[in-house]
Structure formats: C-alpha cells, structure tokens
Amino acid sequence: MELKNGLRSYLEYLSDVRGVSRTTEKSYLGDINDFLAFLEERGVRHAMEMKPHHLTAYLSKMRTEGRSNATISRRIAAIRSFCKHLVLQRAIDYDPALQLEAPKADKKTPRTISAAKLDKLLEQPDVGQSMGLRDRAMLELLYATGLRVSELVALNVADVRLDMGFLLCLGAGGRERMVPIGSGGRTWAAKYIQGARPELLNPGSNEEALFLNHLGTRLSRQGFWKILRKYAGQIGMEITPHSIRHSFAWHLLENGADVRAVQEMLGHAGSASVQQYLPAIKPKLMEVYERNHPRARADN
Image 1 (cartoon, one colour):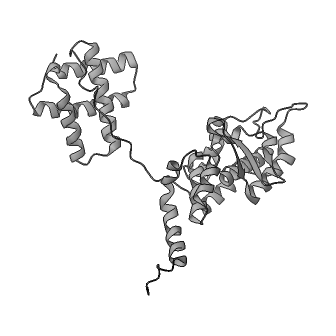
Image 2 (cartoon, helix red, strand yellow; image 1 turned 60 degrees about the vertical axis):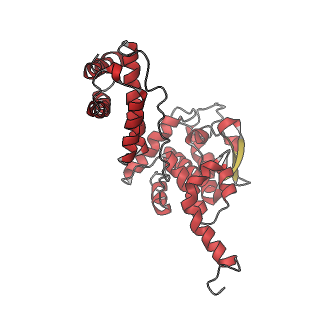
C-alpha cells in the first residue's frame, strides 16, 4: 500500500470510527503529511518500505530544527496512531513506531497572579448576599491556604478551626495536613459560617459540608469553577484555581517563607514539585547569603 493511500484510509478511520472533530483531523493530517514528505525525500513511498530508522531520523531532524518538545510529542503521537492503523490494515507486518520515545514535556514556570489582582478578584462577590458571602469566603480560603479545588469543596465545617487559625485537609493519597488560614481567611470564613451558611442550609438538615450550593448540599468542583470564572470575567482575567494555588506558593516564597513549610502546606509528598518555584526562591537566597555570610562581601 502506498503511504498516501494509507493516509486517506487513516483519515476515514478518524472521521468514521473515532468521530474526531474536523480540527483534530486537520491537526493529524498536517503532522503525518510532514512525516510522509520526509520519507518521500528518502525514496520511501510504500508502507512496507518504512523502517524504524526512518522514524528515528525524523525525530532527529525535528530536534535539529529546534522543534519544541510539545510539538515533537504531538507528531510522534500522530505517527504512532498512523502506524498502528497500518498494522491493523495489514499494510505492514510490524509496527516501526513501537520503540519511538517521545521527549519529556517542557517544564514551564507556573503562571502566577499578582497580589493586587488577587485582591481585586476577592472584592468581586456581593457580600451583602448569602451566596456572595459564601463566594468571598471560598476565594479567601483558596488564596490563604493554596488548597486544591477538590480539597476546598471537600471541607466540612468541623475541619475549620477558627479559634486556632488553621484547617484540616485530607489531600492526595489520604494524607491529612494542617494548613494555616491567616487573618483574612479566618475573618471571612467566620462571617460565612455564622451568617450565610445557616441561610443556605435546609431546615433540619445535618449537612456537614462547609460550602453549600443553592440546594443546601455540598458545592461541587464544577460549581466552584463556574463561580471563579464569573468573578474572573468581571475583572477581565482568566484565572484558574491552579493559578491561585501557584500564586499562594510563589508569594510566600518571594517573601522568604521556608521551602519545606510551603511544601507541607501544599501537600506535596516530594521536593521535586517545589523545584518549579526556584525563580521565586533564588533572589531571597542570594539576599540572605550576601547579608549573612562573612565571605560574601566585596571587600574580602
């Protein structure tokens, strides 16, 4: 089978069997066409002529051209899927892409939001209304603690120790951790628990959830996402719960917080996850070093 015919068959499979969108189909077509053009330059036009070393050479070419890891990984995924289809169509006897390894994804510095913009976000809910007071308390606690959304909506009233200024959170792997909530988080959580929550709670209900929806039951992750999207839109920004979590860690580290303490508050089991915050940590480390180490001064 000619590779061009194999591509037509593959595109029909994507459309008719997998039901992919036109956009996805177009993306696969572009990636595989680039690969087939590379093969044709080397005289490879039939499926049976395609060998593993051709795929390795194509991978090397992309790296030489400076393609990003994300682009390379996407193209390799498309090629793997295409080769698998050719095997199923018996156009080739074996899959030449089996040993082809995609590069690790590029590590990006987490997107953070300035404290001023987060303050503006926190001011959006109408705290004169029960729902608005609930929303303010949720946003305050999210920024004050760096919780994941799943952890935030899973909180029960008993988990928030206002008198002691911390909350108990059940995180990944069932690990419980204690997180400070700060004065702002404590103030708005208290106002919500004492004022708005009883109004949202159904009469006679024994619901334990801290944050309730309009039905008086536990607010869902999807419900929180909609709430955050609304307030972020009001200030013309795209803000995700994850960006607030990153900002929580970033702002602490920028102001000299201990790395291990931040790691504990985030609920990270290992130190590798904190490495992404090194740009925030380094300036402080240099400042501390130059101020305190006897051999750091220029006159030595």
